[in-house]
Image 1 (cartoon, helix red, strand yellow):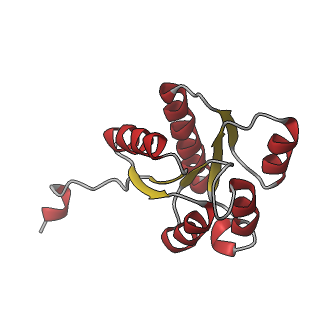
Image 2 (spheres, rainbow, N blue to C red):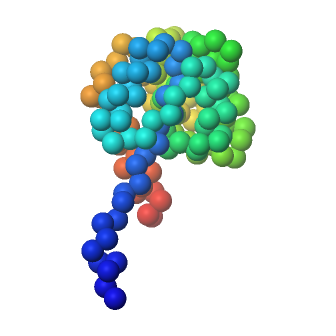
Length: 140
């Protein structure tokens, strides 16, 4: 009768989509994120990333700018046109540090803009902050 009291509730892991054409960066991010109990999806270019974002609906996207097929800015602009993509948190993670790149990404409603090389611990803190803030907003 009271079996449900003993069932451990599984907390839903946050899903993170990493979009970058540099395999070493993708692997490093995937390893660290999975070690921190996140579900990780990867894509090697903006087109593949856009398709996966619409299909998988991640909680957060870590997005590079300079990529083949479709760059990060184009991908982000396309993503925001879809209802499924309007509310996905995006952190730009790129070597591009020019003010016009930051302004273009900011206009599409990103959460943060981080220039490579980056500190993995700081990135993980930013991800956790975004997740906690979104949980708090959904409870309000």
